[in-house]
Each structure stands twice: as structure tokens, then as C-alpha cells.
Image (tube, rainbow, N blue to C red):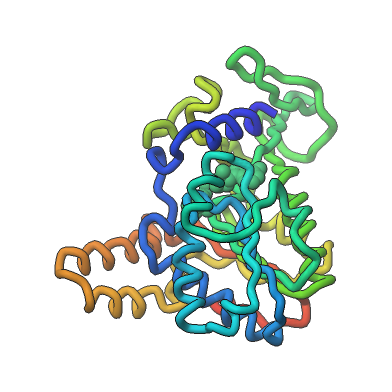
Length: 315
Ligand code: SAH
């Protein structure tokens, strides 16, 4: 509840992109590749018309603006068939998105139309609120926040060792389960890019970024971005139980390289002034290198079980 309220205040009142930089803000090629991914996925779905193209947590709208520019020039049939839907709770970010995108806005995924759907979500799941449980002697406690500090309340039993912290993101399971059952019923796919281990061991991953630096998650609620690592393994199980096929997670660097990150970047760099070309290549490396965003960040896709492995996931 603390994390949900603090983040709602943060995204409603602050410019998150002063505190952190996301992949679509690093290079235009990121959104372009995701647009191409959506177009190839649409073709594999049998080119449904109409089709929903949805984004969860579109931030400044950069990813979708870059994706749509590519879709429009490379696959005009897909561009003509798609209806754009955006899931965003922050009124401030909705206004920024509306300057660049024409679509329909939603507070949650539950009001998306019941149509074949392609979903894109970058650094969305990590912003959803988690619960934390900690082992205390023979039992378990849940962490609450009381006057700027953690307080503990008795909680039901979980199976790990003394002092260990377990996180659970019910909001992420709810939205992934909902999208997975929609995809199983209506057809489509969802692509999540975010950070976390492929199979999360118990750990405390709650973190705060304020003015571009790590800060105490409990101090000054609403002034820092609060995130937790995404439990891809757990979310994959939820999606399978809801009837979707799950692909990955694969490291972001591998996923983007398979989609042509470096080829597209080189093409683009050839048409730029020399200084810009070097910056474009450095940006691609930042997205893909293991020491930067290439390994901790992962891509995971959900599809209708009748679809082949989507681009970037095929072995
Ligand atoms: N995808 C963007 C922005 C990531 S920041 C990018 O890659 O740059 C997280 C985004 O999710 C913001 O747009 C934020 O306002 C939105 N968001 C956070 N919690 C949300 C929730 N519960 N429901 C809908 N959107 C949410």
C-alpha cells in the first residue's frame, strides 16, 4: 500500500525521466525494433483486422512513437488495422503521451477491448507494488511501513530460512494473468521487458532512485521512484495457468541483437553526422552489453498457444 501510494504520487507529480533513463529514451532503435516485432507477430497471427496494439505504462510515449513510425513505413496494412490503446494511471504522463500519440487511455488492462491484441510493456512491471515477508524464528512476518520505518505483522507460513525476505507482486500476477487469458481466448501476444532474475531466489530487491541516485525507499514518499525486481519465473507460471504459451525470459541484449539492433543502428549511423553516429552506437551498446542493460534486463513473451515462438525467442 505504501509503495502503490508513493509511486502514484511520484508518477503524478514528478518527471521520472530526470531520475532514470529507460531503453526507449536511450535509443530510437529500441522502439523501432519493438514495432517490427509487433508487425511480425501480427503476420504470424494471420493479420487480424481490427487488432489492438496496447502499451502498459508508456512513459513519455517515446517507445510507441518510434514503433508506430516503423510500422507505418514498413507494414502499412498493420498500421491501418491497428487500434492503439494505452494503460496509464498518471494524469501528467497521459498528457505527455497525448502530445505524441492518438489512442484510447485506460486505468488498467481489464478495460482493453476483447479483440486480438498485441501488448508491449517496458519497465512497467517493476513499478507495481510488492509485499515483503520475512522469516522470524518459527514463523513469518509481513513488512508494513509505519511512520517511515518497517514494522512487522505476523503472516502465514512460507518455506525459507531465518531472516530471509520473500517478495510477492500481486498486481503483476493479476495483470499478467488477465492478459494471458485474453490472449488465450482472443489471440495475440504480450512482450514484457524488465529487470530481474529469470528465476528469483528469495531476496529483498526494493529500491528507490531519487535525483538519479539510489536513496532510502522509506524516506520522502512520492519523491523517489520505487521498484522491485520482476519475478519472471513466477509470472511465467501464472501466464501458463491462464492458458498462454510463455517464451523466454531471454537477456535483453540477446533479444535485441536477434531483432537486428546493431544492423539497424549501423544503417542509421551512416546517415548521421559523425558525432551523432558515435552516440547512436554507444547507445546500442548500453542497451545490449551484459555490464549495462544487456543481462539484468530480460524479455519475456506470452502468446496464444497456437503461435510459433515470436521473433527474438526462437532457438
Ligand atoms: N515504458 C516507459 C515508462 C516506464 S516508467 C519507458 O520505458 O520509458 C513506468 C510507467 O508505468 C509510467 O508511465 C507510469 O506512470 C506507469 N505506471 C506505473 N504504475 C502504474 C499502474 N499501476 N497502472 C498503470 N500505469 C502505471
